[in-house]
Each structure stands twice: as C-alpha cells, then as structure tokens.
Amino acid sequence: MEQDENYKPLITLVIVLLLFYCSSLFAIIPIKLFNIDTNKCSDLVLYSTRLFANFVTAIFLFIIYYKDLKKDVKDLKKNFKSIFSIAIKCWIFGFIAMLLSSYLISKYSPVSMPGNELSVREVINTTPIIAFLMTSILAPFIEEIIFRKSFKDVFKSFFLYLFISAFVFGSLHVIGNIKSLYELLYIIPYTSLGLSFAYCYYKTNNIFSSIFIHFLHNTIGIILIIVSTMG
Image (cartoon, rainbow, N blue to C red; front, side, top):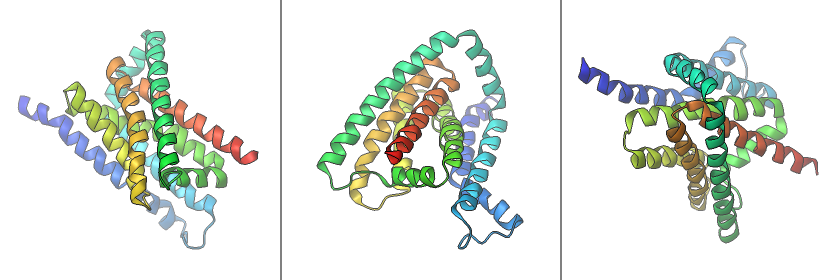
C-alpha cells in the first residue's frame, strides 16, 4: 500500500501530461456537435472551440487536484500577505530575466519574436475577449497545476524540480510553434520565467501564488499588445 502511494504522484503526472498534450482533442466536441467546418468557419468560432478545449482541461485538473486546491485556498486566506509578497518578488525577478534575455536574443539573432508569441498576438488581435479568457484565466491555472504542482509532487529535490519544471515549461512554449532553429534560443526567456514561477510555488507551497503571478504576467502582456496595436 505504501509503495502504491509513492507511485501515485508519478502516475498523476503522466495522466496530466497526457491530458495537456491531448487537450486540443476536446475541441472536436463542439465541432462535431454543431457541424462546424473548420476550413470555412470564422476565427471567432475556431478560437471558441479552443477555448472550450482549455475549459474542459481545466475542469479535469480541478477534479484531480480538488483536495489540494481546497487546502491551498484555506492557506491563502490565512497567509495572504506573506504569500502575495513572495509572489510579487518572484514575478519581478522572472519578468526582468525574461525581458533581458529576450532583448539580447532578438538583437543578436535573425528571429525577433518566437512563434508562440506571434500566435498569441494573432488571437489577441482577432478575438481579445477569448484571448483574455484563454491566456489570462485558463492558461495560468492549467500550466501551474501541471508544470508546478504535478512536477513538485514527483521531484522532491529542490534543484531537480526547479530545473525540470522550468525547462519543460519553457521548451513547450517554443517547440510547438517553431519555424526556425534560432527560435530555440527563446527557450531561455521562457525558462527564466518558469524558474520564477517554480521558485514561487516552492517557497510558498501554495499553487495560487504562482497562478497569480502567471495571471499577472499574461494579463500585462495582453494589455501591452493591445495598446501597441492601438498606437
């Protein structure tokens, strides 16, 4: 029985990674249900199916980690000030590290922006409300549960958890939309941000701390993109 308990976090990690990897398949539900032709439908309809897929993924993760989330909510109420203070400091560090590394890469390589960011900008420019729901609300919850919570439960070593969590997070944000080998360099800024999220969760032991700064980072990014397009 004790051995089964030891393997439980690893099994859960495999399940949530498969869920994350296959999450786009949930978009098939509204497509089939409403007979949507993805080749002819509008961007609004297409992105709505993606939003639905993300929402279903978030629900599954909520169910899987319900007890832990409930515990963290209670802890957040008791220690809000200290958790919030640590979270903000971690985000500032991650933001500066990401900003500097992105600037250096864009300056000394032929690729000025990773494909992932271009995809996000496209969604924001086309359907800003859906972009906000996916990027600021669902993505922080889904990604922090998977890359922080599930990884920390498996990798007990601080440095091993920190590196693997951040590197996998950074890599998956780049590799999925890669068009040039130079874009692999952008794993560095995404990993830098992932390090700050991972450290934040480790330091507070409350998943809502990293969810919050992930939400904060993505929301600020959306606002900056909208403001820049208005100009």
